[in-house]
Image (cartoon, rainbow over all chains, first blue to last red; front, top):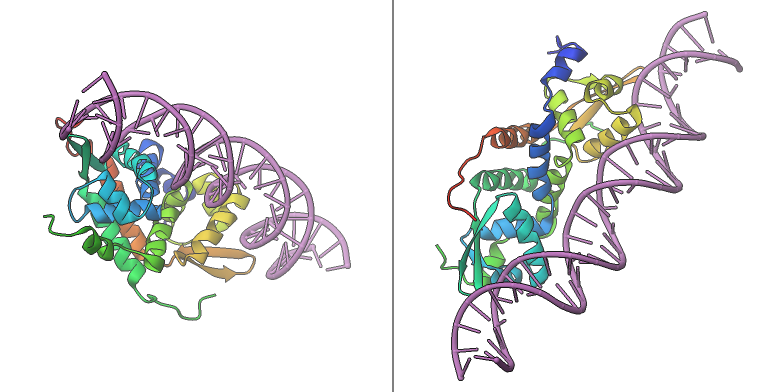
Length: 115
Length: 115
DNA sequence: TTGATATCTGAGCAAGTATGCATATGTCAA
DNA sequence: TTGACATATGCATACTTGCTCAGATATCAA
């Protein structure tokens, strides 16, 4: 497999907004705190305080992170009185998370004479 | 779905090395340049110079990025004379990339009375 | 050896990011 | 209204990150 010229190949690569969007999604998953938040939400909706307690970060930090996830439409809010309940709004993300988790938990796929 | 107590839930969350590994993988996919590199390599192996030309970054920057990907075992090197040919060494990653790409290319999954 | 080519690497900088602190907003009970 | 509670937000700060630049290493040809 290598009949592509450099120009052919360049033309096939992801660019522009689509490229940015892909990198952005991964960027949101690239932080341990946010992974834990999304992991927690995959078990059902939770209010901010509980999320902060479960994930073990300050409520302020939680609120900041939730804003990022909300802006990116990965989670959605439902307000009830003085509480705000967050839930997943994008189940693709859970798939990505699950796949990465499986991958990460593999002992070591293959490790021959590499290096 | 909400029979989990906070403690139950806390116990279910990803932690420690597995959490770090997941976030690290996503971190590597969180940069447009690296997405393009991996995208290019999904079409077959390439030497550093060609990769730099295709992805349109300096050869130095390419070398730095390839080191990251190599360290994380996402790509592997094959040396031939004065050239170094890089290839994907982890096809899970291509799956993640493909899924995120599909996701990103969706017009807008659902946008109801949110907000 | 000398020079050209291909890749790698360390230092430093500019831009981005996660968090804490202080404070603002909004809701409820008394 | 007053005070307590739940969440949100602006700013400052410490940390991380991708790049360039300069120079190192390695291979090949003459």
